Length: 314
Ligand SMILES: NC(=O)c1ccc[n+]([C@@H]2O[C@H](COP(=O)([O-])OP(=O)(O)OC[C@H]3O[C@@H](n4cnc5c(N)ncnc54)[C@H](OP(=O)(O)O)[C@@H]3O)[C@@H](O)[C@H]2O)c1
Image (tube, rainbow, N blue to C red; front, side, top):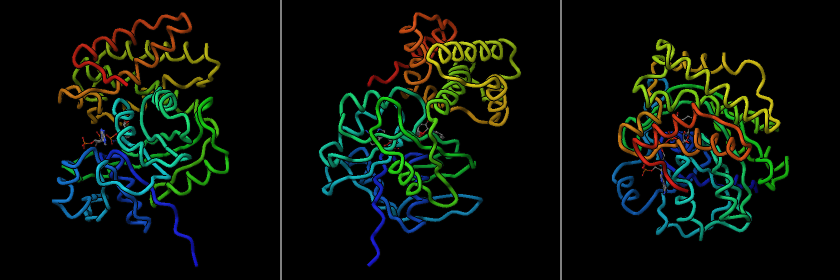
């Protein structure tokens, strides 16, 4: 008898969560999507599943979905794909169903969420993943896999209590063609480089209300972008994190490669939704404050974005 691979429960059925859910379903490892409430479950059940578009082809994948009220079975593996500021509320709604040693993978941008979750649920086996796959929602439960990237997964120093072999097995079990999740033993550097990119691009797109690439054509915005990168480098250096010597070039390269994108922070701000600013510039500023460092440009961007819409509070 062959053992069934453990089922993944996917919390946050937006662009990234639906991408993983669709790929897992297609690969023959049916996941369960965990929705916010019974209303969202009813919305989902009015259709036939996730509409998944990739390479110009669309298919409907009948992924199973649950709400906190409908969910009865235990959750041993949880992939969290909510925005950073929604994570604690989302996990709390399903907390009664989490097994005592549940493995929880945070697949999100921003930093500082793991600390919040660990404070509330110290028993969970937390891992962090970071992806540069690109996906967007064309409609409700209708997503487009728009760009290929890389996904890395590893432990969170000081928080994870997961053996390397378990983390490697988790990375493998979250790999569904064409996406491969690669185990990484240097997640701190990966997360800080991603933080730098997010700190240097996303809030500026809100301030200048522009696409990523337009920041490169605006000398003031470009100067501010480089100032933010210098601030991230200073804070990281004080924390003993080596971000290499090419961070300025990488940030410019990302803004250029994603020139036509409207950042998710800009989209959230324009739609009047909360943004991930507390876990991006806010995280950097908190780290800086604890070290007695000044990050005036990041602080100004944090203030500018939060004035438009108060950041979510976890
Ligand atoms: N999209 C990308 O290409 C991309 C690439 C790299 C990294 N990321 C990161 O990945 C994370 C997810 O991004 P995304 O683009 O997938 O965001 P998204 O499309 O906004 O999806 C977030 C999902 O979380 C759900 N949610 C919010 N609160 C919830 C709750 N209490 N319970 C259950 N579900 C809840 C939302 O539900 P509703 O549908 O009910 O609102 C939504 O479906 C973010 O950290 C983002 O920065 C995204």
